[in-house]
Length: 71
Image (spheres, rainbow, N blue to C red):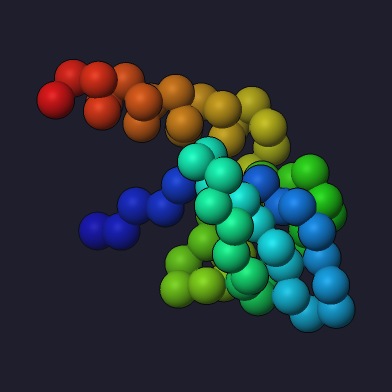
């Protein structure tokens, strides 16, 4: 099973999407979904595969933070 962390779309340049993870690290990915700057997405193998709304992204990140705190 794979786990992907919601990433925020920073910019879109031609076919490349720049996304940022919660730690501030950025990466360039391709996409199979329609995205705009400010959107949140899930990625798999450097491809954005699913678009999340902000409340969904925040909920997933909150769950992951709670899980890390329970170690």
